[in-house]
Image 1 (cartoon, rainbow, N blue to C red):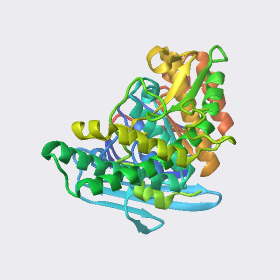
Image 2 (cartoon, one colour; image 1 turned 180 degrees about the vertical axis):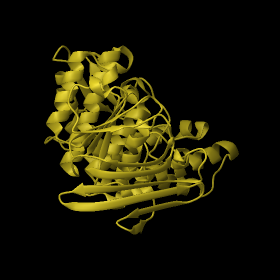
Image 3 (cartoon, helix red, strand yellow; image 1 turned 90 degrees about the vertical axis):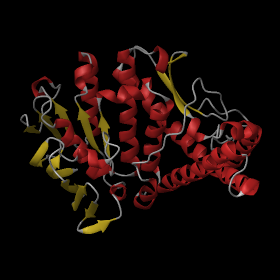
Image 4 (cartoon, rainbow, N blue to C red; image 1 turned 120 degrees about the horizontal axis):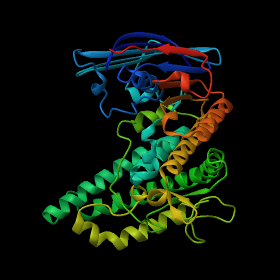
Length: 402
């Protein structure tokens, strides 16, 4: 949990010192006063990246040259002090006085999960939105997963560069020998990533289904399944999107700790585990069949970067057929699943809520409030109307218009 936070020149907040309790903390105030900035600051110190900004320089106040964040975290009696100073051309990150390579190195032991109205894009948005969500949870699960993600991204980029050069010039640096090496490496890493994602989907799918059932009062049911572009055709394929701001190379060194795409010969063993060798060979065959098309188009056409998490209500995809209320419930269920994964493999996360109750009806508000109490996590809620929350705050912070 975070006990104290110091903010200097972060967006509209010029100078603030905030103290938090272990329970439910409510940050109230009018729109534009910096409530979401408080959540963003906590998330950045906890996770090592912002859920709003691609470039941390975007967070510097318009009339300042740098921003400074400092926070004290308490975990099982241990105090961890973290600080970030970001200038127009510099970035200094420290933990307990020691310098770190980047903000991404903060990821690992002090997780945070954010819920916000834009989470509806987890259902309505393109597959890359769900892939980024899956991959973040993969890093909660294991440092090895972060390494696999980082290496897959690197090899895919190199292979795409080779293909683009071949498309332009009719040949590419390194020749066919390099292309074969990159293809072999991609198949190996792709199989590892598929295995990790499929195992994750098996863990979280029943969790998401259970939370949705509670949030919808059992009126309807949803199902979740990992959909692979190699093992099952998708209704929409989009380009690769990776955790650039997540810093997978740093995450790898700082973390610890039913899928409808599977057929009998597609990588699942009789005991339910995933056979990486079967996935690797299937991917190699797929890439071999696509080689001519890839050289014409200049891009890798198949792999984990084309996959999706399918969420269905009944027999139809929620992405196209779910109502606004159904999609919001499903998104909240997905975030609670992330809370469970973080709690199991790391620590209980800080739960950051950005005015999520405003979009829910009374029954769903009460259901979300009950789940929040059940989790017994530290909670920080940003809302313009604290008096309308479905529970009593342990600590209330009031912000004024800047």
